Amino acid sequence: AQRVTQPEKLLSVFKGAPVELKCNYSYSGSPELFWYVQYSRQRLQLLLRHISRESIKGFTADLNKGETSFHLKKPFAQEEDSAMYYCALYNFNKFYFGSGTKLNVKP
Amino acid sequence: NAGVTQTPKFQVLKTGQSMTLQCAQDMNHNSMYWYRQDPGMGLRLIYYSASEGTTDKGEVPNGYNVSRLNKREFSLRLESAAPSQTSVYFCASRGTGGRGNEQFFGPGTRLTVL
Image (cartoon, rainbow over all chains, first blue to last red):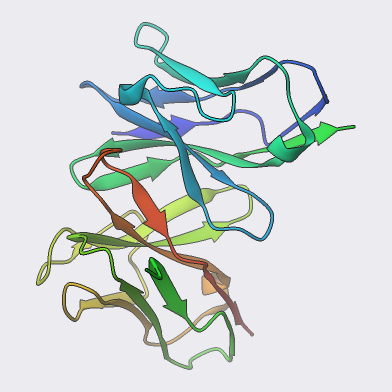
């Protein structure tokens, strides 16, 4: 069965510090993975997807099939990065979301 | 384009009452979804519709029904509301364009069942 785990409910870092939000998944095939972000008073929106190998707002995420992980990283956190982050896996029309990590970037 | 719209934004029900949450999208997407968001549990899929005329259960369908009225609209109905259904409900549609399987979310409906 598909499952997405985000072990940290809350992650607090200082501005300028590196940040890593962890995501682990269980899936038997080739997964399609995403990071979604929800800023305060805004809609949930796509941040990035592993297939695109993109960097959005300085964030990157690498799929590690051996460790079944898709951690989200940014070398220098900014205050505007404070938000709720969700890791999600797509399979046959359905998305499976992790429980989310709240990132708090302190000035 | 409005994207995905949901009504109402807020609702308070008494146990046993019924209501329908409305969702519409103007992006010509085939797939639409209903989620509930609870603290510490992330988003859980209630029902989805892969195309007009089809609906399927997600992880937590009990106590809910859905209708895919047409390609644009996908409604969620609570027949007899219970306090356990207090949650924030999100509707989403899925595109298959430039960014692949990207979901577009509505603003959410905050439902309280007393």
